[in-house]
View 1: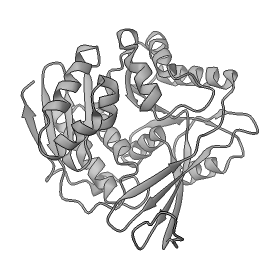
View 2: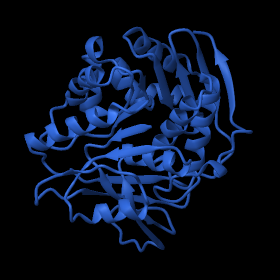
View 3: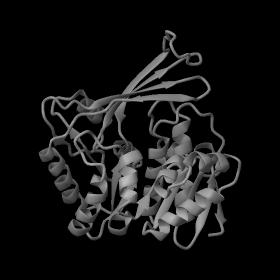
View 4: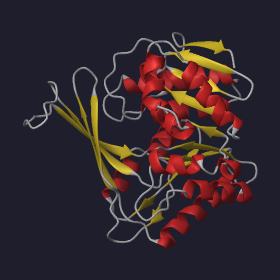
Length: 324
């Protein structure tokens, strides 16, 4: 079982434009999608499509249209009920013909202290029978930036057997980085920019150098995070692939050829692919291969479409060991 927590879920609305986006102009989309959104929910979606068990935990009103989308997607879920004014936010993505995406994310509701405690209790309860717990995405208003850092030690106490993965950014990621001595997850999945936030270096430069074939900066930053207690650092790098670094070894994966349609959800699919492979007993290199194959498949699909295992191209996803 893989349990996911999405404290700030969303309805993901995607507008597909037939021509490049021009700021200030009026555009008419030729396609429009509304689906379940939020990092943890995307991970649960990918795992469910692979016919593996997962449960998504998130806050929601009982009459929120978001829940209708969750049920339509047939996702196993355990929602925590919130107040009548706390609607799930809407995130809007605009995609252009060349694959470029522009995201406009809503702020989400302000959660009451009681709701925050219910989320913690729900995750702890479900973690007791889980192999992995994924803490994913931004934190809604009313939740302290260091909440993930508080939650990890609580989960260790409630479910010592469970492994913990984190995928977040900005203030929650920075706060987690400040508490790795007491709150290091087993796995963290940043992109290049987020790795820079965590390691205190220029993440944009890490991404630029990786695109040029120089992964040394990403490797050094990932090793720094390993040394602070995170056993597995999986760094997704878009078209440059991904890097996986453990205390003893590191690998780079190059993605298969893909026509990029939308990158929304690609990182979440990468994380799901990695966890599916690790849970199935595959080694680190094979798990990285599945991770990149999943992310690449997602990038070739419209909107926040999550790929099925049949859509993966692992044959053309190459993995190369690098010197640690």
